[in-house]
Amino acid sequence: MLEKENVESNLALLKNQINPHFLFNTLHNIDTLIYANQEKASKSLVMLSDIMRYMLKDAKSDWVELQKEIEYLENYLLLEQLRLKNEKFLNYSITYDNKENKIAPMIIIPFVENAFKHSVDSTIENGIVIKIRLENQVLYFDCENRFDNFEMTKDSIHGIGLDTVKKRLNLIYKNRHKLSINSDNSVFKVNLELKLYEN
Image 1 (tube, rainbow, N blue to C red):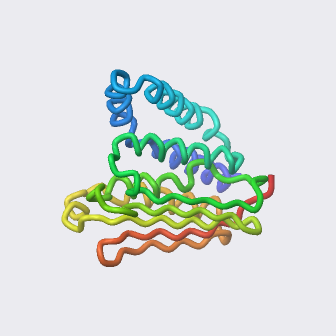
Image 2 (image 1 turned 120 degrees about the vertical axis):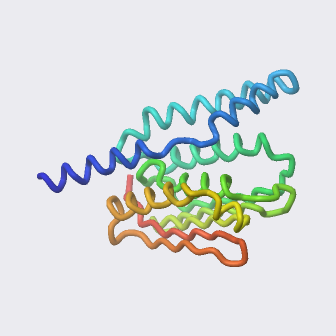
């Protein structure tokens, strides 16, 4: 019982450590849009509201529907793109064979947040590449971004979010996941295989 309570308290602590770094930037971008494109500003506010609702309500559960987790991720990507002038900077793709699965909430978003936080030169194509594939109840998540070695060295808090998600994976998906993180030629790569639970 003590071990179970300890694991549950650690999970609660780890969940609370994950917050959207982009919140204030998004609010600034929406403020700018209000005068330039009111319809887009309104839609962006709805997406931001959905993200906050998910974090405050759905993410409190141990498990969420995979579809909800993906919707959260895609709303996040759309809001990040508000500040990007280059539509080809982000390359995102997803394929399903079955949506009836459960996943631990906010288990992949830290990798995506990290990619945006440390990416450089948004004028290039495929600066961030995110691929998600669900096959036979296994979620394959691949994320890569180009980064600046000098900027990464200056960032003393880099890696805290990744350490957190590693702990969550080991607590929740022990013996049910494979995680590979490496960097080569200024490209940071994350590959995750996650055995999901049926709905």
